[in-house]
Image (cartoon, rainbow over all chains, first blue to last red; front, side):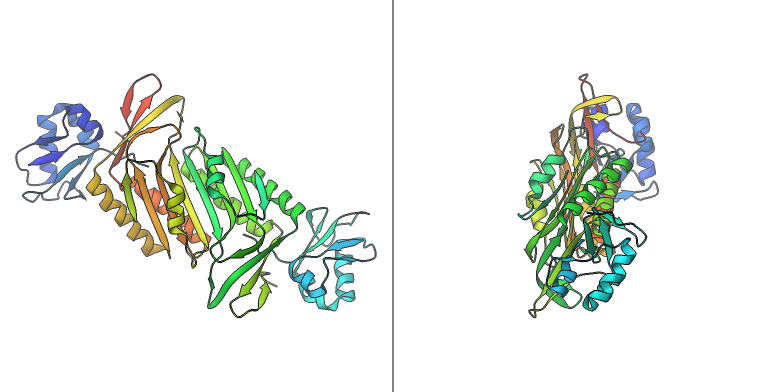
Length: 77
Length: 77
Length: 137
Length: 137
């Protein structure tokens, strides 16, 4: 599955998306990201995730082919 | 003394100012206006007065040569 | 800064005047001539003022507002004379470092203006009649 | 109506778009790039977004705002890309029949936008360093 990266998350990894094995839920994905990308761990812990353009909690299931994004705390406006 | 008139007060009397004998206080002036100009009585009862461009209460003294105005309830904006 | 004017209010100019590098927020309020009041149809309003006192009160409102909020720049401008539906009768533009302050300061200024400034409007109803608006009278 | 843009925000056009004969009040909020944050000097900001979700969230905020207040017209516009000090990053224009509603609706919309819309800014400090702004991170 693809996870879109933005802002500091993108700068930390130097890429704007990453490919990762399917995760059943957002919580699984968060743990997996933290293990695989230690640089991202601090930010991932305080970030939100979006599944198909909607905020998702750790218990939200990730459907196949979902558009998933890691959303660091927002600062628009 | 001169009393400036605005809005409905001006339309009721058809003039934009009136000359009247000196009044010691705003309360005196209000009573005098009501007696001399019965058409104005209803509006004068709910109007404010200004003495030298400042809102005045019925106990406010009116100095000689003061600029006095009858201010019906405002509706600007 | 405060202004009474008989010309159309140029709110672009007025907003540009309040923008500042040290202020991250601008709030602009425009009062416009509304066509409907309840069921009654307005075609125009005439605004009258006691100009010397109106300017004094507007300057006081600016001073009070600046005392309560960290205003960078502000302008209160009121138009007088004959206004058609849709015309702008009043504009208040305020800049502040942050948005909460800018909203509160702008709202305070227009609320006080409507309470305190000796300006009056006369309705020109669609049926041809006219009527000074004196709330509570 | 909502918009993400890389061009300068034309708030005159945007305000004209919301003016209506049945609305006596327009409130416009502009967020501008502030030079000072505490003691630190900003020279520019870069705004990044997750565009599809940002547009969806902005549309939801418009819908929520319209549910709570009698909005005549409203526009939320956010600029993306490189902005210099003084540039406008966001504009919210709202028209309502009366002013209290217009203030509340405009403030609600910008408050929600800052909470919910996936847009991020990167500070370009005067000392040459840069830093993504992630509140609480």
